[in-house]
Length: 533
Image (cartoon, rainbow, N blue to C red; front, top):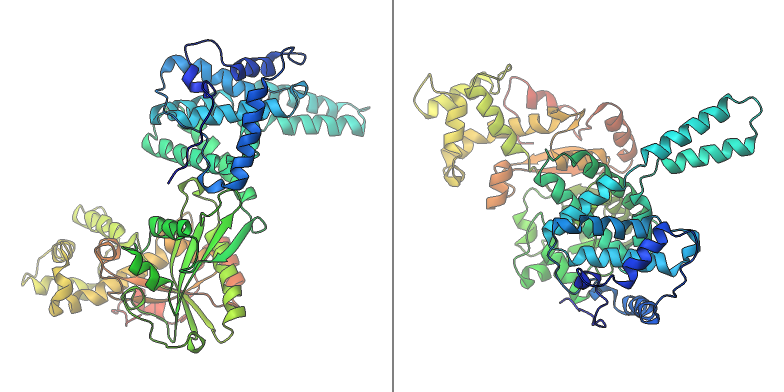
């Protein structure tokens, strides 16, 4: 439940639009343009409210919020947003320390009180009007070249012009992000702001400002990557006795295998099951990314035995295998920030310490892109736009035979057979499709690339993290989601600890994928149906 704090009347900036200028808007103007300290002191109530917010955040950061209203944004306020942002970004040293923080906080409060359209317009103003100052950059570059060409230039001058050039290349919104980061609740605000930014970019990729918006999103992602490093994040085990708000977030954010109720959550946190999450002080009681693990006595070949059944071992100390069956990133605003790869490696260290008898570390992973990819390839076959055959000769024969037509279109037959999930319950259809779909799934994982790397996002994540491809499992996820993504197939990626770094290096250099059994790819991709992988 959100806890809204009370405010003295008139302190919300957005509530005073159209009336006399708010004190902080006046201060924003002064901080951006004044050559000397403002003659009027800060109202004592504003400073007091600021420190009250700091104390309130320190006591209960999880329920802290910056806004308590909704402001209907209109285009006539674009100039107001520019002045407000300028007051935060272009502050001068004589403004002191408190006033820039107050104005920056007022920007955040105004943003959070806007409706979705208002937030979009705010982001567009920030990206367009507060990017890199090109005039300043050109001027700094000229001075740098002049210093380089000058025979009598001192080392002090060189350092000064280099510093000026470096500073000019930073976008102006860098100052805004840095100041927000220092505010109570500032990290959560920035994560939510980038979520809105990612959504805005995806909604209209043809917008004239899309380039500027993407540049700002990438810049903020790089700042997050620096702020959310292994030194600033805490690895914590999540148990049934963890805080209720943490457990609620696990249920809410779990994206791989949804948790339907509290009973299911208790099973996933019970004997033989573990859950770890990365936490950051800037987003307290929020697992930024979390991983669910099953302790078993062999590599699992289907998800239902893990999430729907009781553990097969009576004592966790009997387990020799750890199965990572779900990794979830909870914050869309942290898209592109590498957290999961650090999480797996940290968790492996924890498991080695607490369960030294475990020697096998393996995933049971979905293949979310396989079915959409195969359907696209079948469309190309039907349109005669695919240059290489999709099916082997014996596969074409088998698909045509089941329709009793020698001239049937194999792609059309496969599409018809899998139009619903009835084929999974018919032994003849299931046995026919198993070797065909296994081979095509192997081909998809091993050979379909995007800029040298695996096209499938989950495969790319684990292989880039140093894992080896171990096995493809038939009918491993019979849920609607599993059938929709990959005809129910899942993959085991194994982390061979003595090969992880080498695998990672080769994958980044030339896209090489390491196999646990190097002999099987020739069967998967050759002229023979594959064995059970």
